[in-house]
Image (cartoon, rainbow, N blue to C red; front, side, top):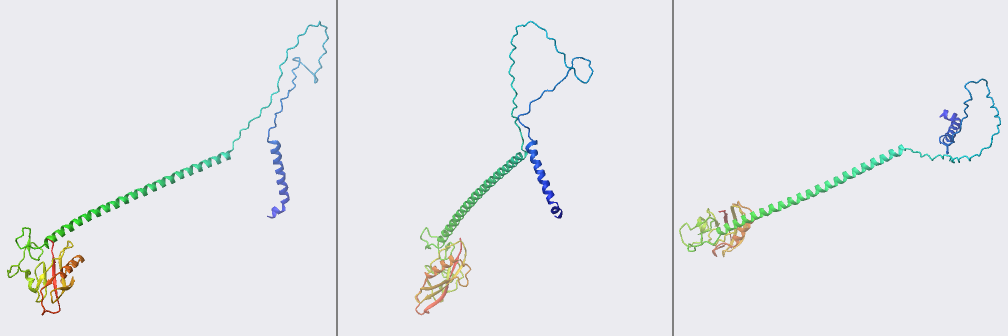
Length: 308
């Protein structure tokens, strides 16, 4: 900094001088003046003989005038008028390397931009195609699920219809041996003709559980001390399971069941459909009238659900 401050004036003058010099060179020295200057002739001395001496060329002798008869002179032919060639305007061809490089750079950038746009368009098309394929696959999957559900429901309905048909045959009205369509008599779930242990005909109590004792047989049995059943309706068969449902019942003096609680101790089938079917059947059951019995007597009805 001290050096610059010390020589500041000299540097300023030097810079100004060089700037003026450069301006003058550009203004007057780097351009060809137009029109171009015409060519000038050069004096040449060929001499008059092969030998000579001295420093000065002698003046030529005067030619003696000879009188000659005048001859008719023919006019000299007209010399063609020569035209001074005019210097044509020279066309200067220049090449701007900087502009060429800039144009190439712009073209390169445009190519890159166009390639980038093409890649972006291709990526967008691929994305839309993938989304469309996924949507079609999802629709096919849902259609297959619906089809499987329909098949499963159809199979389930067919199985339930078959079970209901079996249950209807099991719990159908029992014949007395005179109807050709009858399949048997009794309250158990298998085919056959169930009777009474003592062989009494027309009895409405079947198996070893009749007469109010503890039943060990299969089908419908009850336990109600001192009472006999007037009717034991058969429950519906709501499913495809097997098991036992024990219903606790409360019976009044007139033999009517006033309360039924299914699924008590001894039950091993606790599906809601079977419990409800057993409860409804128990409420429809009736026993014999006994005015000497308690006002409300408690007992049980056991339902054996067995698939054929």
